[in-house]
Length: 184
Image 1 (cartoon, rainbow, N blue to C red):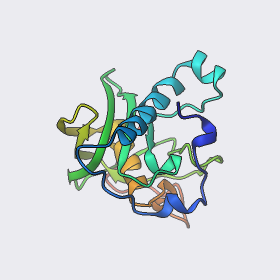
Image 2 (image 1 turned 90 degrees about the horizontal axis):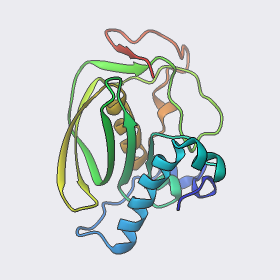
Image 3 (image 1 turned 90 degrees about the vertical axis):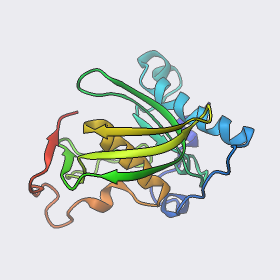
């Protein structure tokens, strides 16, 4: 099981590396790692388990955040309609995106960043993500809202990009023209 001690912190060199593709079919070790990423995000949202194991709640986690520089992410969240997005993906890629932007009104956070970093993080309002599940199935997900933002955040980790790289340094809360503001 992944714990908070396994999650590396901002400043660690692995967080700035471009992660390697996972060879298909994945090794047993890679399947175990990906499975444990999903287990963490699910457990971190369960108050009892999170308290017992001192887990900080999260909705997504990427392999580089546990110092494994491979293209694997896990996401577990419900959108504003209550639809559940629970995915563990090998080699996820954004294959298309909208021109329209969106951002979380409250800003973004990250399990690898301990302090809050205020500011709007512009993202694509809609994305289509393609990846391979633990069962070996190729999936294509059309995402919008919080799910689109979360997948972009996690895929950025695979490319060595941190969410705060997008925040306007001079004016963190500068209005993002034409963007959709999303409440969490």
